Structures are given as C-alpha cells and as structure tokens.
Image (cartoon, rainbow, N blue to C red; front, side):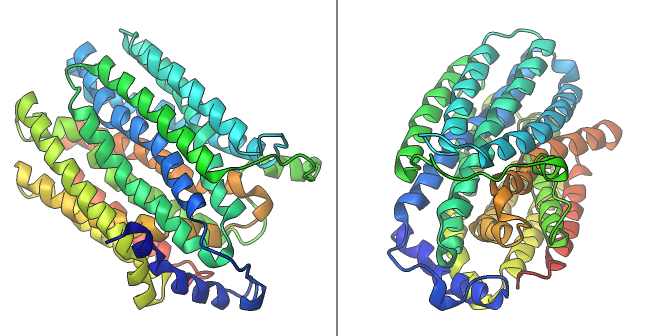
Length: 435
C-alpha cells in the first residue's frame, strides 16, 4: 500500500476533532489547499536524521563500549550516565526551545539551531570514538545531550509552525512513522558493529548529515526577517524559559507524564536489551547480535504498519486519547512478557506487541500534544517539554531497570515496566480538552 495514501486516513478524523474543540477555528476558517507532503516527508527525514544515530549509539554501541572498558560495573555506569544525561537534557531542551521560538534570521527561526545541533552532535560522536575512560564517556555524552536538543525541539515545532490545523493529525502520522522506524533501524545498524564500535559511530555520522539535510530542504523553512517577536519583561521573560505555569496547563502536564511513563517503560528494555540477551538469557555475543537483528526487524515491521493504520483506527473510535491510552496498555503487556521465560522468543513477542503499540501511539501522539499546548507563542519550548519525555524516558527507564537489576535481578524489571504503562494510560484518559 502507498504509505502516503494510507497516512491520509487521519484527515477526516482530525477535522472532526478540531471542530469539537471549542478553542479551534470553525471549519470555514480553515485554510484550503493541497496536503503538505513536503512538510510531512521533511519532518520524517529530519526526525530520522537525529533519532536513528542517537538510538543506535545510546541503546547498543554505548553500552558495548562501556562493557569493554568496565565490564563489572556496566549496569551501574549506564544508570549514572543516564541520570546525568537526564538533568542536562532537561535544562538544554527548555532553554534551546525558547531561544528557537524567538529567533529571527534570513534562514528562519528553526534552521540555524538544527544545523548547529547537527554539527555539534557530529563533533561529540567523533570524540566518543576516541575516549577510553568512563569519565571521558560521561563528559562526552553530557555535551552530546546539549547538542542533540538543539535539533529535537525545533524539528517538532515545524508541526505547530507550518501544518494547517485540519492536517495536523496526518502530519503527526509522518512523525509517528519516523519514531517507529528510528528505534529498530538504529538497533539493526548498531548490532552489526558491536565489535567495531568506532566504525558504527562513523556510519551514523554520515547517516545524520544526509537525512538532516534532506529534511531541511523538504521543509523549506525560509527567512523570517521582519517577523515581530514579542519583547519579554519580568514574569513573561521567566515563563519563556521555564515549564509553563499559566493557561490550560492541566492537560498539558497529563500528556507530558503519560508520555514519560510510556517511553520509560519502553526503555527499561531498550536501554538494557544487549545485556538482557547476554546476562539474563545467557547468550553469546554472536547469538545476541543475531537475536537483536530479528527483534529489530519485528519492531520495524509492526511499528510502521500500525503507524500507518493509526489514522483509520482513530477515525473509527473518534478519540485521540483513547487510541493513545489503548496503545499504552498494549505496550504494558508487551514489556511484561520477557518475565515469563529467559528465552529469545519472549523478546520477539515483546517486539511484536510493543511495535504495534508504538506505531499506533506515535501516529497521533503529536496531534494530541499540539492540541494541549497552553501558549502557541512558546510552541517549540512547550513541544520540546512534551517531547522531552522521550529523552527523559530513555534515561529514566534504564535508571529504574538498573535499580531493579541490582536489587532483585532482571526478571522483575519487566512487570515494573508494565505497571508504568498502566499508570500512563490512566493519565492520558484524564485529559479533558481532547476527545
């Protein structure tokens, strides 16, 4: 099936959702015109430009390098690294998103930050191939978080900047497809370089440049010179650089924490997937590599398939938040499965269920996020905070896993991840602004 046509299953659903929202414009006022495919594919490529390299290195090559340097302390080191990265990413995301919202230049408000982020992440990747100590890795990865978030918040803000309201759900589906491609593709590439870590990082560097440049060219964000930027004073200046405190923030924070729990549960497994195969399932490195590739392929197929189906499913059930909540529950079932048996088949079942869940979730997640923004003037900063749940979840998940592994072993981390998902689903269902 043509992916572009499948994705458009979101169109009519999104239109009805916006009509039901009393704060959105009436149907007559909605802009007319063709569907913005260039924007959709630009977001897809731009997202893959940073996501695939980041997840490939973070989930596989970085743990492999840590295992080479300090095999006896690897679990604890991953947790420490994740904690530091979480703090750095939180601060960087808010500040950099706010600066992007208020940038006026001949290259637009988003492009300068994305390009700067691309170059600085490449520098960090290069030096990651050279470091030989745990201290060096921690310093490098902390700087990498600052560089990465120069790209993350501005790219997702293109949805709020450029997507017509009646097409936001469909544009979100492009982003969702990218999210579901990113994890398995990053893992599949990285799994081929577990014993050649530096070579794998170089491959990801080339990938990042190609895909980011293609994404920016497709989006075509031009000069915004002459755009008036509201001058900020006193409390307004403070609010521009902090978590939102005014407006309809209840639903905003429900979406943030619901997403955080969903992603955290995913990365309880993803953050330790190499160690799960080697330490929990007692496989050799060669067998672990083979099984990682199989698991990643299952994630890719189910994730992309259900991301494309997300629109029609949302259309049938007439609810963004219901689809997100159901997806979160499905993820909870998937992440709990490996507790049944320390054998590879449980990871394959996990991959099937979680891939489907991530596909459905990500296909409408950004539409939900845009709908709960408390202030459109702070779109990049606030969307960055919502999507910071991705970054924080990738950190918080491994931290939780490390604590559980250290206390009672690998087996109990799987049901713990399932409980995270159930709580996340409840938070999403509590959102009032979106049906």
